[in-house]
Length: 535
Image 1 (cartoon, rainbow, N blue to C red):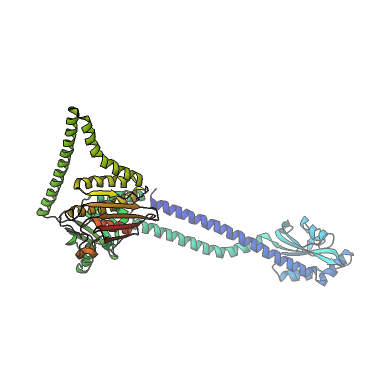
Image 2: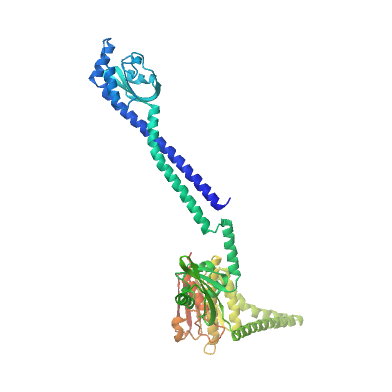
């Protein structure tokens, strides 16, 4: 069954059920209220007649076998009310009055008169008599403290129900009108849903969303969609990697302003809104860091106007830049090859020592190679419980050893284990800070010994990371902009000013802070404080 048919049937069924239940309850309440009103009205009239001197005298005369005249008097009263009958009986339940004169003198039909006649109490009942089923109200006639007769006032049940149905008919018209309005609204809703969903079923819509998401992520160009407030509504994997170097997932971008990740791209989209009067694609270039990008901006237009923009951008690399990228990769390959050759030579040395029987020298050679590793491994294992961070520190120690930089971890450091999402972000922060520190210390090795010191602590509500290096420090001309994308103190073309930008983004994610200072020992200290309870 299609969704619109299911919704229509379920809505109609629900509305009909509610109408039937509500109608039944209303009718039941009205019936009880109507019968209760008749009973109260009948008892009140019966009490009045039970205290009427004319009625009392006539009943006393009948009880003493004396002549009486009450029929005309009672019938004149009944004709002025809506009562179906008014019957007065003596103390033996014999009728003194009746709408049918032939029934006068005969016993009252029904045992429901007994409580009023024998116990002297007022009460009502629904029973059948000579005139049919009726609502009967009984009040005793009392004289000198004794019950001498009973006044019974009745309302035929069928007549009462017909009056009730007549009143309910007016209410039923209103209920029917409400029901028809509900059906009309259901039909309108189904029609609107059909037009909005293009007659697609929910399963088809879900599948299309999945298909579109897979297609979007398979495109290598970066794609971003923003609304009229320049907040990101959709982003593919390529765009998330370009904007945050992969440290944030796609869900982290949704709802955030585009300017938070690229002010130049946000400015470009705003300019396209002002320059493009028609719904056409705008092509332009912008910069992120040291790289230039080409952007195609497409407005999202509906019958209500422009609802946002879709941005497709990709690196605008020239032949020279491509050659530079290839050269960088070749250099990196040569570096790996040289490291492999270095370790191969060390293995050859060990093999030669063992073959000529110099076992002590071989052991000493191995010991020299492993002492430094064992020391740093022991330090990392005893202070860092997070396996991802521990692995990062060991890798950075190896890198520092290759560069000739002394890398040390403060003995007072302490870091517990965290869930993968937080641990990965800690790795990104530490990795960038340590990389910057190692490079700065190595570049300044001619001025003072190249050293990098690290301190970690999460003993309080915050995670503290301090990285101190013997580098030359942050130049004054970029001191206030060092955290911005593309700002770097390095002259190397491969350094794009991304590391500290990523650190600042993650610090903001953790609602923390980042500070740096030049110490009295001519070192640069970067301090990061993060809220470890961030959700």
